[in-house]
Length: 195
Ligand SMILES: [Zn+2]
Image (tube, rainbow, N blue to C red):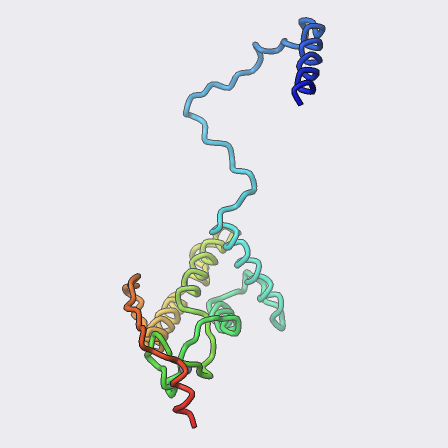
């Protein structure tokens, strides 16, 4: 290993010695002054999580409009398409939202399974609308026509928030980090009650 290192060093020394004077030229060339007047160079296409999510959402929405029969042009898109899109997304939701007849309605920690549907959580939809709203204007849409900024969307989201808060027993105003851990709860008891 040490001999290998030696050989390399000898080669390196030899080449630099023979290299002559031309290799070191050009030092006096263009120097960019380091003053702070210039904005930083645009970031390489490494998108932040928010930006890439926004782009994904925008593509998903565009695809959704294309898949309508007949397809909906973005210029003809209004808030009702957006509301339909939000309802359509519910089938991919992962949040259990209890129906009024369910025994777990209003319980934040259900003690067992139930057949209530999985939905998109209000918080996800709210964030999604925010991203799409920004994306719409970044893609040439005018703020006045922005369907994602419509009052109908706001009302819709508020209703979802309130109904999910009731169904899940979770007030959305304050999210408590610390929860009281229930230790004596056994989920197996639930099955016995069913017979
Ligand atoms: Zn339920």
